[in-house]
Image (cartoon, rainbow, N blue to C red; front, side, top):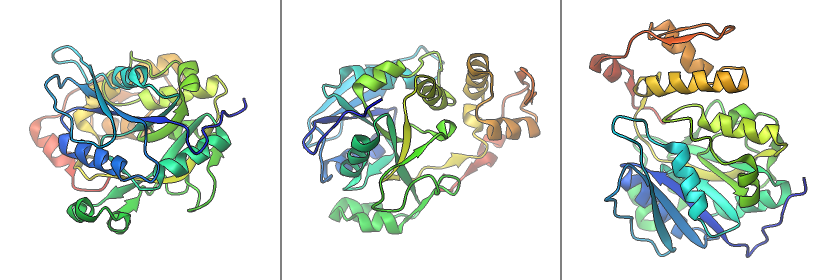
Length: 301
């Protein structure tokens, strides 16, 4: 497959899904507006947030909505697909609501898309709990974000060194939708995100596996984005139910288990019964408030 060319003046759309993350969204939009290569538009898809008011932006910003029923998980895949359908550009950049793009991220990422085609993922750095984001808000200097952030220890080797072109990879299982670029034609060829995956867990890997099956190349770029800090659960007990449901669906579809580290942790702590080499994964019990509180840590990721 020959990659299409985006060129230095090719219009692109930035797509963000958000649910109750208004402060982080405002910083992401602020970062987009400060980029050296700015998009033609920002499309924000609010999930289960019908009355949301978007942050101010000097880049054209449009809003769409996706909703799930009462008590149902967030429709992450449907939200991404709705944003893509609403976008007016032939080049799509998906950006997680927690991520602030470095000023040169889009130029770097789209240059790599020119060279490689397919899916090109940006490189996240994780802001620490004491990161001086207000200083960045005031002066817009990326140096403070670089100083107050760290790479993900398990993914630092994926991205090339600064200034080097994107690195082609067969590690489709390591794809994340935190920030990536793709031509609309390729996104539609993949079929978008499978909306039968509801809530957290597995939908990114499913998307990447479908791309691999359809011979869409994958590359990891050194284009930098900064993931804003929020507390995390280790393991992610707050998403236990959706992870179990989505892991079963993934296994039925692909014949292998996703999220094995989390499943191992859940099994070790008695939340699930899981056979790695078999087809059995059963929810045994749900965490109580004390267990959820104990699992929450104030780490960058």
